[in-house]
Image 1 (cartoon, rainbow, N blue to C red):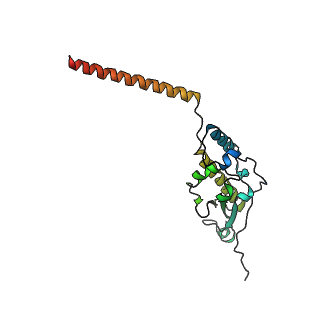
Image 2: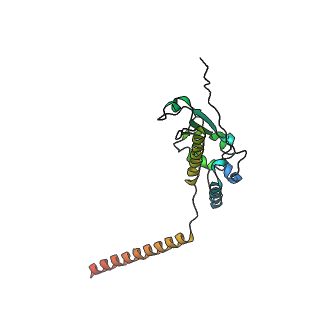
Image 3: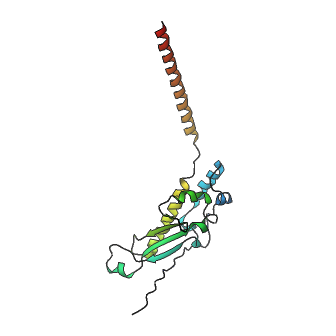
Length: 187
C-alpha cells in the first residue's frame, strides 16, 4: 500500500511583477475623498487585468472535485481553491479603499481576512485555476466599482437643471392656483 500525499499542491501565477500598480494615493487611503481619487481609481480598474494579480498575492490548492465525471472524479484533483490574503494584499497591490466593499463579498472569510474562491467547472485543474483567478479579478473589480462615483456628464447636468426649472414653475403655478382659490372664497 502506498502512502498518499495529503498536502495540497501550490499553483502560482505566471506574472513576475504587477503591471497595473495602483497610484500611491490609492494604496493607503481608506476611502475615496476627492474627484481626482475617483478618477485615479477608475483608471486603475480599467487597466487592472487578472494577470496583474501577483503570484505571491494568492495561494491555490487542489482537491477532488464533486459531481459527474465517473472514474475521473475519483482519481484526480481538479477542483481549485484560491485564497487571497487581504492583510498582505492591501497596501501592496490592492488599494485600501476596496477593503470595505470586499468584506461584504460572498467570497470573504474573516479569519484571516481573505477571499476564498473555488472552481470545479471543468475536469482540468489549469482551466479551473484560470476560472478561479478570473472570478477573483471580477470580485475585486466589482467591489471597487461599487465605491467609485463617476463624473456627471454635461448632458445630465443640463437635464437636471431643466427638471429643477420645470418643478419650480409647477410649484409656483400651484401656489398661484391656491391663492386664487382662497381669494375667491373671500369674495
